[in-house]
Image (cartoon, rainbow, N blue to C red; front, side, top):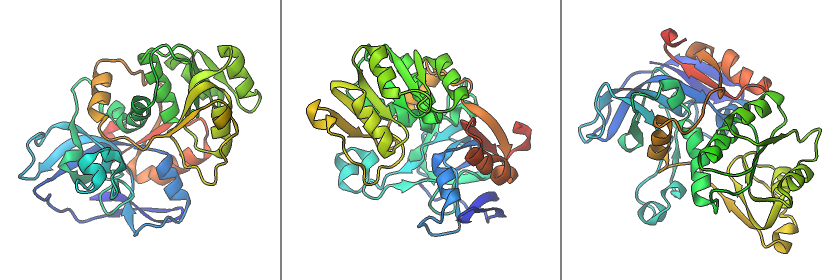
Length: 341
């Protein structure tokens, strides 16, 4: 089995791995498509504190190739998607909720031999979901980034009719614009540096897009909404973007941090003077069935999100390096099957 193996910073190799059979509660999936996301870009760029080598890739769709004896919800030949988080099922969060905050959560694609930049992958049966026939495999590979946005929306105080700002025009931010439109937000503002992403956001439902380089995004938001937004979603995760989100809120508004990581982030004074609420949002877990329902019903627009498709053997040069160096790329998909290209 061919797979993309991470050894360290800028060292990913296509290697052959021995096949193995599944255990009683596992499923083997032959991969159709796997998306490159910001985590993959970060892992590729740095020496990460993981046991290496490991197989990367986690935004996966495919076909069931083998099931363990305890698996009853899918069978060989079924079209499926994989949820890329594996809770332990034993800790306090797993037993009492919320499971996405599992104390021993295993992040698929940066742990062990079975990531999805590969010909096949083996995962716990609980993480495999039946894929409706009317969802193409390439669109299904967007399930996880859509789920990240849906989780953030679900745990927030958002309600239909709210004015909402989104900072960050990557795949998650753009798909989140589509979600906001589907859930009847009023004014939807997308803030991103890249012109092509701003234009796509308008097609996906944004009512205003802002270039934070040439425009003062806080002033633009406040003027456009006559006082600020009820909700701001930070899909970047930097000190500056959090401060901007806080400043553009109405009193008692809410910031949801759903992207990136904040280190040593200073909380702005507006947090107190506006009685604001800052909420963190961690990955996605139980949202996968809802995402698939929305995709099957045609309620989430995804056109334009996939900007490139590459063969597994070219994942470094045509995939990871392109994603690193070309700001117009949104979602690059990888396949181990040449006939998919």
